[in-house]
Every structure is written in C-alpha cells, then in structure tokens.
Length: 410
Image (cartoon, rainbow, N blue to C red; front, side, top):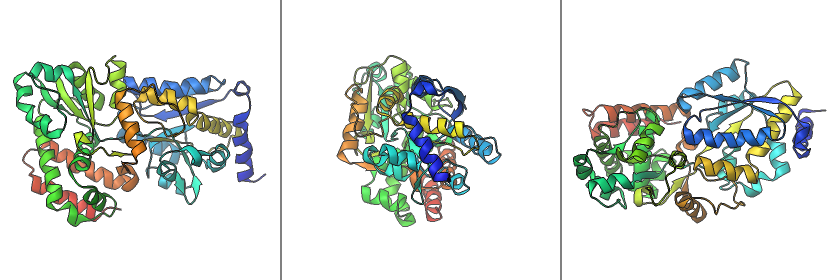
C-alpha cells in the first residue's frame, strides 16, 4: 500500500464510530490566557468525547516563545501529535523537509475547499498543491477595545474613532486613567502599528507596501501620517507597565486603562470577566475609520511519525477541529470568526457580529504572517519595540528603518 493510499484509508477512518478509538495525542499551543484556555478546552472536549486522550502541551509566553520550542522538537526528532502555528508561512521549511503530515486526502474527502471562507485560508495551508494544515479560526488585528467605565470616569463620551480617542487623552490622564494599555512583548507594538496603517492609509498605499514591497511608498507622506499616529500612541501608553497582552486587556476590563489596540482574541478575556459587548465595552474595527479586517488566525499542523495509530488520531483531530459543531463552540469562546461559511453564528456577541458583517462584505486583507517571512516579521517587531520604548528615536528615523526592511523583505 503506497503512502497516499494509506492516508486515504486513514482519512476514511474518521467516519467510524468515535468510541472505537483510544489514542493519546500531545497537542502543543500557546493559548494560556483565561479566554484562550476556555477555547482550547473545546477542542480537547470534542477529541476526548470519542475516547481519545488530549495531552495538553500549552507553552506560556505567546507564539514568539512557543514556536522555536515547537520547531526544535520537530526537527530534533521529538515531534508532538499536533501543533499550533499562525495561518501563513511559519511552517514552510518544515513542510519542505517532509516533516508535516499531508492532509490533502482528508481535506478532499470532507470538501474543505467548499466551505472554508475565505479560500485564502486554505491556500495558506497549501504547498505545491498539497494541504498540510487545518485552519481553525480567523483572527483580525484591526480593533480598538474601549472601557465604558473609564470614559465615564473621565467625563467623556466613548470615542467613535481614533481622533476622538486621542482628543480624550488629557481628560483620561486627569482622571488617573492610562489612555492606552500596551503589553511589552514586541509583537504587540508591531500589531498596533499595523492596525494604524490599515486605518489611516488608503488600500492602494497599504497594498503597495505590504504586498508589492514598495519601499518608496513606505517612505512617503502617507506613511509618515501612520508613524506620527504611532508616536502619539506610545505617548498615550505611558504608565502601562504590563508585559502580556491579556494583562493589558485586563487593564481595560478593570477600567485602569481606557483602551487597547489589539486583535479580536481580546474578546475571550472580556467574556471570561462577564463583560458584555456594547454595554461594558465598545469595539471599533479599523479604529472607527476603515472597516477592513485581515484574515490571519491559527492553524494546526501534524508532524509526521511512524505509528499508524497516531496518524489516524491526527486525522481524527483535524476533522473535528473543522467540523461545524466544534467551529461554533471553539470560536464563540475564542472571540475569533469561524473558517466555515456554512454555520450558524447567530449567538455571537455584538463585536463578533461586526466582524462577520465585514467578512461577508469582502473587505478583507491578508495578514502579515501570510505576506512576510518569520525573519522579516521579527525585524518589524524589533524596530517597532525599539521606537516604542525609546522616545529619543524620531518618527523620521523609525520610518526610514521601516522602509529599509520593506525594501529587503523576502
């Protein structure tokens, strides 16, 4: 029996009664906050309902900490059963080295191409025409989350856009409230810059820089405006002395900070805290200007192994992760949008409904991890963090550094 035939037989096994299986599978991921833990528990519950055992391999510290550990284990011959990466190019070299399970036969048998929306999510899992990952959600970075209690304490209305938020800064300071919460991990500051870029530039300029890698546009006045806003943001964040993103979100939840520029996974923290969208907090996609969202997110890959039982369990887990019931339960807890376009999300909160409307409108962009390599993204992270923390670095200097990275991006 050849390799593809074997995989086809294993893929077909997912249709057997779930109680027929009992395999341990270690799953590594970096979901450790309250909301994230509640979400990943939905995967574990579904997997174990069939008699298999989910061995949780959570790695604290976010993707920047977890990914090198995951990659080292896979390359070093100690692979886990399944592992999270962001949807994009992070696993390219592992795939090229033959270290990731080919899921094409399963995907074709279940018709993933018929319901994954947008289709680029499945494209991001595809190398040389073969599918190597299962996309599980759509995460977008282009949001600002605002505490109603904080603005009430400052005697101002909840802002409707970025400029109104900036204008409320002095009143927030006077009330002893940090205007903008920001964690110290480098990817968070780069995320904030990217969100400002989407909100404050035209789609043509954004695409020129991020898709065409046009360094001249990155040096232009259109991007100077973004860097000036980024400079304002770092000043508004003074006093936000936390590290992790969920600690910054908690500042907004408790009203010690007024707002956070962050991805929609922040919703999970608001939900765990019992807060209600539109009542306790407001979310503005595109910072109230440009209601466009990127379509990044998370995907699971399954390292190759020599045990047919493990391979069969990997395929069962992949099938469950993209199944209608699990897509609903997982994404409602995670705060993300489902990758399926054929399921009922009427129970989603106001913020998720906004995201679903934008997705349905087609106003979507690829994410940075789909457009740039890990090395290039790390260069952006380092540059933005240096600027954020060192106020002696000027707007002109950081813009020049940014344009240089764009010019040499791969």
